[in-house]
Amino acid sequence: MALQTSAEHPAPVRQIAMAISGWIDRLGAVWVEGQVAQLNRRQGMNTVFITLRDTVADISVPVTCSRQVFDSLNPPVVEGASVVVFAKPSYYANRGTLSLYATDIRMVGLGELLARLERRRQLLAAEGLFARELKRPLPFLPRTVGLITGRESAAERDVLENARRRWPAVSFRVVNTSVQGTNAAREVIDALGALDRDPEVDVIIIARGGGAVEDLLPFSDEALIRAVHQARTPVVSAIGHEPDTPILDLVADVRASTPTDAAKTVVPDVSEEIDRIRHLRDRGRHVMTTWLGQQMHQLEAVRARPSLANPRSTLDDRARDIEELRARTRRTLHHQVDRAHNDLMHQLARVRSLSPLATLERGYAVLQDADGHVVTSIDQARPDQEMHVRVRDGRVHVVVRDTEPDPALHPDGTDETTGETTSETQENA
Image 1: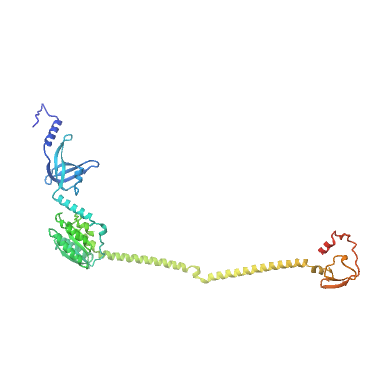
Image 2: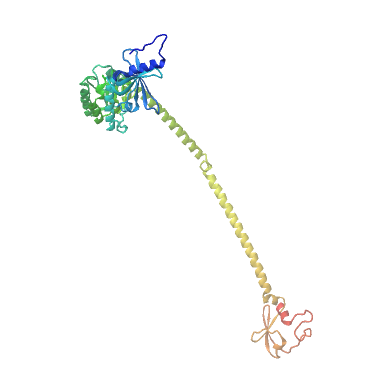
């Protein structure tokens, strides 16, 4: 019912706000179609804030939903996606704002199509078809390049012209197929099988120009993806432009952003290769020249050594060393012989000085009886006894006539002049 108000009896703001809230609460839940213009997932909050915009008029409405509802979507909702939400209008009286609280969100139109493609991509990825270790390297210079593209298309012209501009001798085997429509995927699969069986084809390019998402659907076909995965020849995907990402880009060995980029990827640039060869040749010449210069410098240093510059100088030095050693040896030996001779002479002189012959040479004689015993006292001599007198050069045979004691000796045999006994006197003699 309408509120009864007047200038004299106005209604307070809270009453009006509560009335609006009550009117809106009486509205049931409705299905609303629109495009996600803004998406806000605040950290730590259980509510997701979405701005839903009309696809024709410049009108938008805020939408809230629980995080559980939003996270259950596969693929997840992104900004720009077309969706249908089942929501109930609600009025927040404290702020005076209207919003829709969604309990169900579904993709529609392009959004639903992208969702199906995303689910297909996830299933194929789970099987391992996109694994990096399965990617095969491209040959440096392929003998023949297989090209699958539309007849007289811009993609065919871009690939052929750019490839031949880079390497004029490149050979192509072109197979024209439909690149959109219901039969496109099957024709591309047949062309891929024919080129893969050709032993002269070293790499295959699947090329198409840009277009809408619906136009590129054949290149996300599951049968085509599995055929590329099973192919033995490396495959290059060149579908659309940089933002276009069909599933073929994920399974191909190399993804080219455009057909022109595919030509640059498959064949090298002859001018760049010539420059690289020239650079490598100059670098190799520089390295070899530097190495030869170092070796020549080392050889000159070796040749400049005295042992090689004048080999006889070393021999002469060694010969002088040998002569000096021989002279030192000779001098040392002579000194040792001289010292030994002097020592021998000294010992000989001492022996001679201690020899009885030396005493005999000084005029002394030794008296011996017939048995050869030395007579040291007159008591050992008897008259008419035969004795021998030993002198320096022989013996004298004598007969004792008489004995006479020495008056200078005491009866005990001590010499009065020297104080020595007779035996000591004889030993000193």
